[in-house]
Amino acid sequence: MAEVACVGEPLQAYVQESSSTGMVKARLASIDAYRGLVMFLMLAEVLRFCAVPDAWPDLVFWRFLCDQQTHAAWTGCSLHDLIQPGFFFLVGVVLPFSIARRQSSGQTFSSIVRHAVTRSLILVVLGMVLIAVHPRRWIWWFGDTLTQIGLAYTFLLLLGYRPARDRWIAFGVILLCYWMWFALAPLPGTDFDYAMVGVPADWLKEHELTGFAAHWQKNSNPAYLFDLWFLNLFPRETPYLGDRTGLTTPNFIPAITGGRYFCASERSVTIWGFRRRGPLSTRKLLAGLPSPGNRRLIHLYHTLPAQVMPRSSPVAATP
Image 1 (cartoon, rainbow, N blue to C red):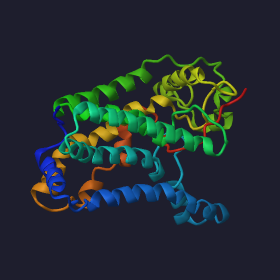
Image 2 (tube, helix red, strand yellow; image 1 turned 60 degrees about the vertical axis):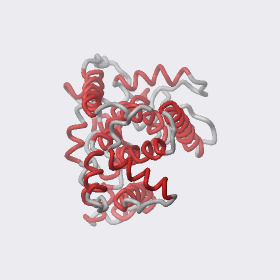
Image 3 (cartoon, rainbow, N blue to C red; image 1 turned 135 degrees about the horizontal axis):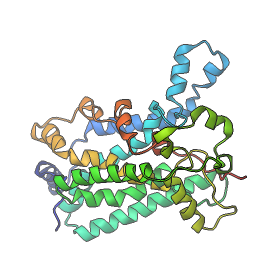
Image 4 (cartoon, rainbow, N blue to C red; image 1 turned 90 degrees about the vertical axis):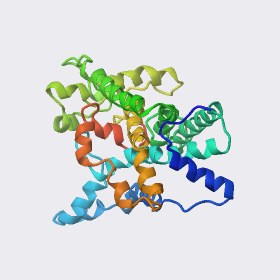
């Protein structure tokens, strides 16, 4: 059986002991707390904090809450923007546990990979089902959070079977190549019609990127051009011209590094969580969460709000 590099011996022993005794050992409260935090941030949108400052503009505190419950228009960061990378991080958190449990039950590498591929397909389909709920019709679009996780999941699992050195190399190569894909792509001409691809003139006037940053402009970057070709391969009522959010299918590629981050740090989990026979504290786990400071680094390879916005309904722009 192939050895999983990101699953350490203490974690294997932990899972094997649970399997042999038939009892589930104590859950890591930090992972449950983090999962609950991410779900709360996602569901908190229904609280509609923005309705308060809209009615009373002078309420600074409520305006702050509104800003953190709303996506940044394109560049920048809010707490709401961290929901999707939070999900990817959570996938990386639980992946070593999942692999170790399956290995302890005698599953082979090929069976684990088949299970991962099946799970990936299910997540992709579920994401597309959620997209189809409101318009009551099937829409071929792969920017939903669940769909993006599904596209990345199998690749993340395969990286888990590589040594730490290879995983760090993959981390750098993915980010660098994705950044270069944008940086080296030719800019659109001055006559490019942004309104035709779902970018209104008033939005562009306020959020237009200039100079080198223009390579990451909404609905004119290389990832958008890929979708312009790829999504029009599927049957559609009207040709795909762009999505109002700017989300694209290739977003899952750099997002792989978000899940891979924790898999590479699994040794710290085994040290703090098992060798010292104490629970991994919530503070230690939350210390690794994506932060606004980290987002400035991630901005090197993508215009981040487009990378991390959670679910939205795709809207095909029309001339």
